Structure formats: C-alpha cells, structure tokens
Image (cartoon, rainbow, N blue to C red):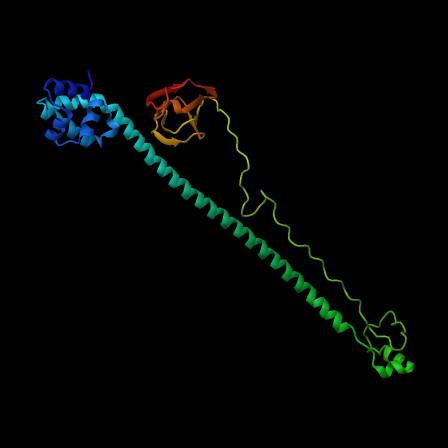
Length: 308
C-alpha cells in the first residue's frame, strides 16, 4: 500500500489543486501539508494533531476519512512507536539519575555516621584509660607524701637527741616487737623516708584494625560468583543506550535502562525472555557463552528466548 502522503499528492494533482489552495481550504499550514505529503512526520506535531490534519486533508479532497486514517497509521505507525519508545527511555533515564543521586547521598550519610561513631568510641575508650591511670596513680602519690617526714632541726644538731628520736618505743606486753632495729642515720638525714613508687605506664588503646570487631566489622572486601549446577546465568553489557525488559522463567518482567559500558546480571533455571529497545546496543553472554547480535542498532527486538 502506498503511503498516505503519496496518495494525497496524487489525488490533489488529479483535481488540479496546489499546496497553497489545500492549506487555505483546510486551514493547515503550508509546511505541514508538504511534510505530510513527503512523509516527513518529524516536522508534524503530536500524533493526535497529525491525525486531525489527515482527516481535514481527506475531507477537502472528498476522500473517505477512515481509509485515510488507516493509511496514515500504516505509514507513520513505526515512526510514532519509536518516538514513544524514546520518550519512555528518556523518562526512565531521568528516574535512574534521580535514584542514583539519592543513593549516593544515602551512602555518604551512612559512611559519615560510621566514621563519627568510630571516632566517638575511640575517644571514649581513651578517656576511660586515662581516668583509670589517674585514679591508680593518685593514692600511691598520697601514701608516699605521708610516709616522707623530716627530722626536726634541733635533733639534727644533737646526735644524742637523734639517737633518742630513732630509739624504738617500748611495746606493751603481748604485743609484737620489731625483729630488726632501724639503722642509725647521720645527723640531718630524713628519717623513715619511703621509696617513691614509679607510676604505671599506660599504653594508649590501639584502634581496631579493619575487619575486626567494631562499628565497621563485617564489611566484605571481596565477593565472587560462580555458575551453580543447573543454573542459567545471563550477562548483558551495553554498547549504546538501551532499554531492557527481562522475564526470568515464569516470573514478572524486570525493566532496566543500560548506558554504554554498564553491565547487568541475572540468574534463572530454565529460560530468559528479552525485549530490547535497541537490539544492536547490547552484547549478551549465556553461562559465559557469547550470543549472536539480536538485530541492528536502533531496532526494537521483542520476545527473544534464551534457554539451554
């Protein structure tokens, strides 16, 4: 069947009408009349308005309007289908970008909270260690200060007085006597000086190494995947922007928008059914085996079955 534009042009020329006369009669702009006859649907407005132009044009030529609409759908259907597909891809791309931005913010907030929690725990541990060290060192210093006494200056000048001061006092009956007399000291020497104990050396708390117990424990550094026995594994890599719909076995369809260089991975048991918005824009592997191209670039490929 010839296109609707060629059909209109032949009827118009047969009736001896010009493009300007048709435009004046139908009140359609001249450039729209030319675009319709040339099949240049990209210059026409939305599909709803374009159908209105077709009806007006057919009415002005005395043609059947429904037949003209049928010819228009046959001629322009694939164009508007691709246009709708591009609009859907654009909307999905905007949604994917919005999701990525929100996910990036959530990850940043989570990492910041984890770092702040780690810093808080380390600072609290260090504070408790310092307080415990100060508490243990304080009583020892106090006991050392009380044990250290000096002999009066008058006793230092009189040796006999010093000996009298150093002489042990008599103990009551039944009480224990010292087993060893205190050594005689030189005049002027402090009496009963206790040895000063050294403070304990407290080593600072060592931060937990990555992967040990702590706020960030359990974060895996590596993950590997293997083909399970009896499983089907589908890998897609986009070479161009492409919209992908995947149905795994008898499950619900899953949609995804892949940009150039992005990869997708699915697992199933029996089969995968694919619909590609850009058949030439993806490369596929089934259980590691490369698959043949699904079609040329820009073409929509539907109900592609991949199974064992």
